[in-house]
Length: 71
Image 1 (cartoon, helix red, strand yellow):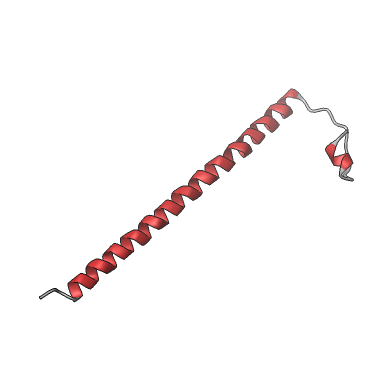
Image 2 (image 1 turned 90 degrees about the vertical axis):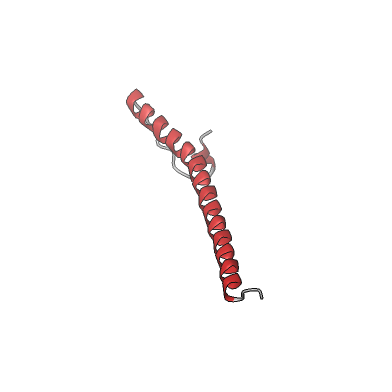
């Protein structure tokens, strides 16, 4: 039984050509791959932000040391 029909949706019987199926398969593959790519991009962005925060803390510490020289 069609999932759409089980969920109360409308099922339209249609036959796709092999060219249409190829296009749909390619789109589906790109969609599936885009999720892992997006996850990796998020990870890279998070790491970059963590590195920036670490660099800022280091610079703040160095500035504090310059402003308060030891005798």
